[in-house]
Length: 111
Image 1 (cartoon, one colour):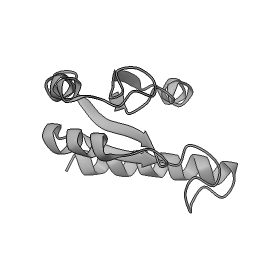
Image 2: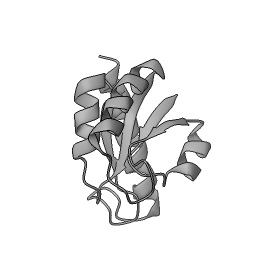
Image 3: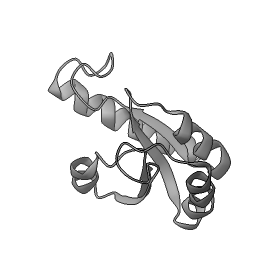
Image 4: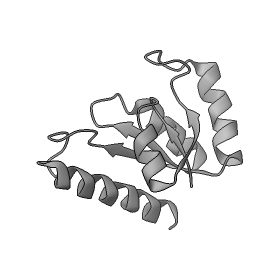
């Protein structure tokens, strides 16, 4: 499955789950996307069949939300670390909450 990421920080999770990073919203690490980059992503994400746009809970989710609204992909906020969400109180909770959020995003996309 193809996903877009706000920041390239999910490589190990994507590899573990067999997902493919089709695009990064940040053109370079730590650099917010400009209007031109967002416009290009609006064209690229549907063409690349991107179903989810992933961002860490601590990141500004506005670019992901804008792209989700324009492309039909689902923006998913992930806890990123133990304590990153109410459900991620320990390592097992982190995995459970992350997987639940991914599956919820897929289910919402496929409706």
